[in-house]
Length: 256
Length: 248
Ligand SMILES: Nc1ncnc2c1ncn2[C@@H]1O[C@H](COP(=O)(O)OP(=O)(O)O)[C@@H](O)[C@H]1O
Ligand SMILES: [Mg+2]
Figure 1: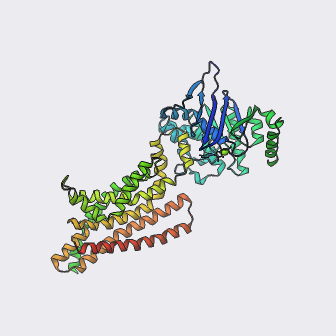
Figure 2: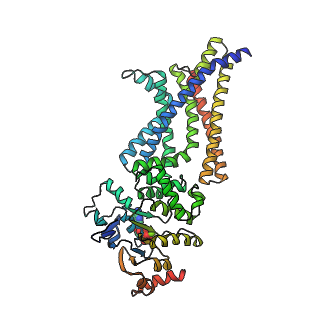
Figure 3: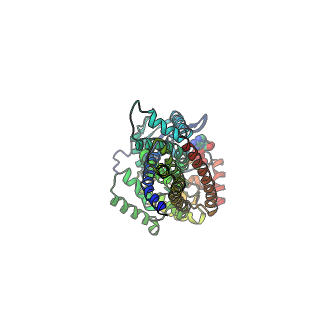
């Protein structure tokens, strides 16, 4: 996509969200440049999932604005007709911690379904594209299997293919490897690394420190619904100044 | 022996009417029941309450009462044929009985799958038809067949409005020939034949669900025990029906 004025791929300003009277997000802002990869880390319950769910409106923020490629998709009055919620979601992909594949559909159908229903591609077009994507994530021999017949790592790769099939401008990942057996994680991380190298714009909640060091350009550290620190991944993940972040990163590295 | 054979031949059209009545009642009842199941899962409290009320009304009314209301009660507004009245009354009754099954199976669709469908920009209608419906069809088929068996047996009630279904046919043969036992026993045999066939389908469907959902054998065996319980309850109902019929 052309980007004459150099607008960020995704720009979120002052995203706020409460559940009941509990403030979960206290005004988070971020500009994600085209092709940039941002890792989001932070303690459990700090609002990481809620934040990225706000970015494709699976949660409706209480306040804030969203721009995609310079174009306003959520204004300060939170006005987004349903039509534009769907058009936003076509442009912003989401990969979930628990894969969330459609259990009654085969891997191929999982990847094809929204191409036909949301993008209006023909059955042939969508199948060809799905086969190509499933091959790319290493699942050539599993296309006709249902999610229940696949390992966690395989399911997550189908889920990534399902998202890629929409040709999104940005992909959001919510702890894509935490629900997968350690020995299967590497195959998912490999696919994500390839995507990053291919120039995909990505925001990923992840606690895979080594992967983040290598794949992320910047790291956002969230604590209590606020950005505690945001900076180059090399600095934050290897030599954080903030004591709390240092302890957090050390703990994660120790685990791995 | 000749009498038995003749009677059997005469009962076949009655059986056919019963099967048709059950088929239309099920064809009306299942989509209505699915709609009610969706409404019962709706975020709108008003819609949920309206639906609960309707479901409880038609589950609470004896099916015969609903049939009388439709057939005799509406004469001021419209005159319905017997078959149409049966279709409406038993369709609504079947819908009320299936609503809870659909409500539970719709509620059991994993929330994450619906969110995933939203995240790839599917509309609400598409999510209902492409994600929720296949899931529901997979798991709800066995209990729905159970309800269909009850609906089929329930068609005997149509005798009360003079329909020539299986029981009505058997009874009138008995009255004409002054031999009631054989026609009734033969009708019973035919009812049993159809319900056994349906129960067999129910078992096949249960196995399919077990295979699809990876449910283990214990659950299936537990369900089978439930089915025996259901069959007993069904038999109770059938006895109730017979009593209702003897004093028209
Ligand atoms: N739908 C919800 N309703 C109420 N509370 C929620 C909901 N979703 C998340 N929360 C709460 O918001 C807080 C942040 O959750 P989450 O964004 O999942 O954190 P993280 O992903 O960083 O672990 C948690 O305390 C969680 O209990
Ligand atoms: Mg989370």
